[in-house]
Figure 1 (cartoon, rainbow, N blue to C red):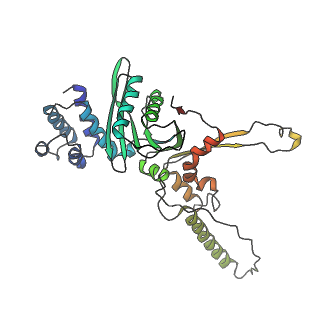
Figure 2 (spheres, rainbow, N blue to C red):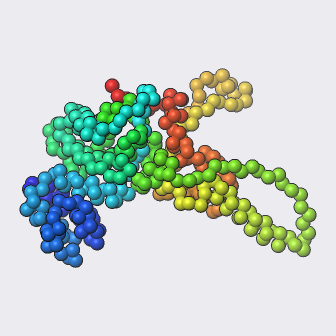
Figure 3 (cartoon, helix red, strand yellow):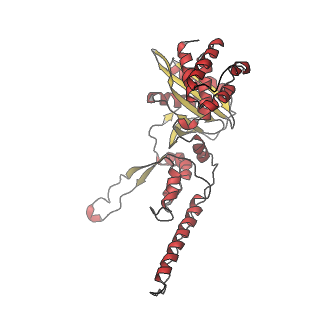
Length: 346
C-alpha cells in the first residue's frame, strides 16, 4: 500500500470520534468482521488509526478505498463543510430518463478531458442522492486528496449541492461536468450557503412549513386613562404587546425550528425617484445594489429580532420570505437578465 494512502486513511480515522470508529469502519465494509474484532477501540485514537492502517496494508488498500471512507465520513458529518446550492436549467421542458451509469461515464470523461490528474469517486444514498468526491491535481502533480470537492446531486431534480475545493479554479470545470453529465443547458448558483446540508435541502425541496404573512395593521383606538390606573394599564399594554409580537412571529415563521441557513443575498434593482430640482429623474440606468445577510443561524436570528425588541413586528416580507425567494431566485435572475458567473453548456 502506498505511503500517501496509508497516511490519508490514518488521518481520516483520527477525525472520527472514538466511540463511532467501529460503526464507521463497519459501514466502510473494507475490513472483515474478523479483522474488526482484533482492534482495541478503548485505546487512544492514534493507536487505533495505526492498527487500522496495518489491516488496510494486509488488504492492499488503494486510494479508491480510502476515498470511500472519506465519503462515508462526510456523509455522516456534512456540517464539517460549507455547502452552496446550485440550480440547473434545461433549454426546454423535455424530461429524460436518468441513467446513473451514463451519468458517471459522462461526468468522468468531461473532467478527465479537461484535467488528466483527477480522481473521482461516487456513492449512492437514499432519496436518489449521489455523492461525488473529486480530488484535484495539476498537469504536473498528482491529485491532492486533502483539497477535495464534494457534490450531492439528487437525480430527477435540477438541484446540486456543492462543497467546493479551496482551489477555486476547479469550480468552472466541476459545473461544466455536471451540466454535460445530467443533460442540462446551464447551471447557476442560488447564493445560499450553510454548513447544514439538510437545511438547504429542506429549503429547496420545500420540506419545511412556513406560513405567509397576512398581518393587517389595526387602527388606533382612543382610550380614557385616569391617573389611578395608569401603572396597571402600562403593565397590561406591555403584556398585550409582547403577546401580539409572539402571535405575529408565530404567524410568519410557524412553530417548527427554522432551516439552518448561514448566508443569503439579494440583488435589488430600482429606478431613481427624486425631486426634479436634483436633475436625476432623467437617468434611465436603474440603481442596483447587493444586500448580504450572514449569521450562524440566519432564519432563527431573523425570527428573534421582534421578540428581542430589535425590530418592529411583523418583519418585512423581504426578510421573512427568504426561503421562498431562494426557491424563486433562479427564475427572477433569468427574467431580469442577471447572469454573472454562470456556466453554460456548449
